[in-house]
Length: 415
Image 1: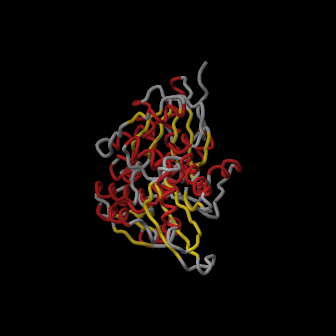
Image 2 (image 1 turned 90 degrees about the vertical axis):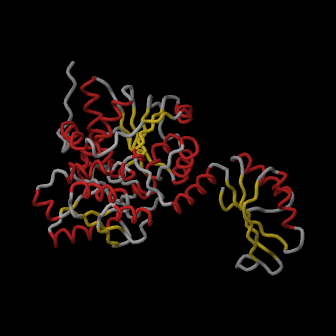
Image 3 (image 1 turned 180 degrees about the vertical axis):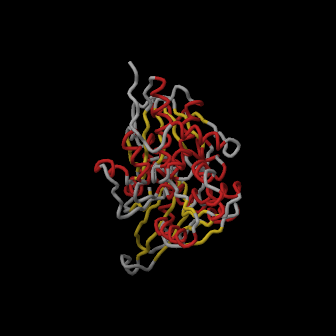
C-alpha cells in the first residue's frame, strides 16, 4: 500500500535538505548522549540531542543562517534587523558576521548581561528597547520600514523553519530506531521544522515516529491555539524558560504543527528547575530552562509509552544569576533544600535548641536570619528563618516533624 502524501505545507523535506547543504561547515553536528537515569523512569531508551553545545549555544544559528544566506545582494547591502532575548540574537549575529552582513538587534531592557555581551562580541549592533521581546520586535519592524533592513524573524519564516528542521535529519541518522522526538516550543519554528523532516522521512520508510512539543505551563500558547484551530495570544507570559516565553504562535509554524505534531504538553516551573539540576548533576551538561523542557516532561510523567525517545536540549545560554536561582528552586522542589520560618520567644537558648533538633535530624544548616521587626512579630518575639540542606521529601518531613514535636511551629518558605 502506498503511503498517503503529506498535506501541502509551507516547508518541505526538500527545503530542509537544501538547508542542510547550506549549513555544511557552519554548524556543528551536535552529539547524542544516552541517559540511563531517564531511561529507567520512562521505561525505554532516552537520547539527548545536545544543541546546547552548538555554536552560539543553541539551535538558532541553523535557521538564522539558512534565512540570511539566501538574501539577494541588494538585501544584504541593506543589512538585517532582529529582536531577541538572547539565543536568536546570537544566531543572527554569528550568521551576519560569517556572511559579511551588517546586523542590528533589539533586545529587551533587563536582558541577561552574558547574552547581551555575547551578541555584541559577535559584531552586531545591539540596542535595548521595551520590556518584552514583542516590544523589541515591534521596534525592529519600525526600523526595517524606516531603513530598508531585512527583518530576520526568530520563527515565523519558511527559511528559518527549514534551517531548524535539519536537527531532525541528524537525529534520524544518529538514532535510526527512534520512536518519539521531544522538543521545546516557543513560537514553533523548531518543532515545525523537525516535524516536517522526521514525518516525511518516516513516511518514506513506512514507519511511525511521534513528534511531541513541550511548553512551560505559564507560557503555553499552543494548546489553546490548537484547540481553537486559530492563533490565540496569551494575555501574560511568565516563566524561567525565557527562550520559549512567546505569547503568540507563528503563523507558518502553526500551520505545520496542527497538521503533523502528535501532541503538545506543558510542564510546571518546578519541573523545569528539577530538570536543569538533573542535567547538571547526572549528565554534566549546562542547559538553560527552555532547553530542559523535554527532560522536565519525562520527569514530571507528562509522557508515557513513547518507545525510544530523543530529547532536543535546545540551548545552554543561561545567566549565572538565573542559574543560581533555578538551582535553588530545583533543589527545593526535589526536597533537598528546605527553608523554614519559626516565630518564637526572644530568649537565650531557643536557637540553640532548634539547631540541636536540626543537627540530630541529620540536616545541615546553611544560613540563619533573625528579624525582630515586622507586622506579624509581637514585642518580645523573634522570627528566625533557617536555610538547610536535606536529603529528599521524606527527610524534610522528618525535620519538620521533629521541630513540631518539640513545640515549634515551622512555616515552610521553600521546600
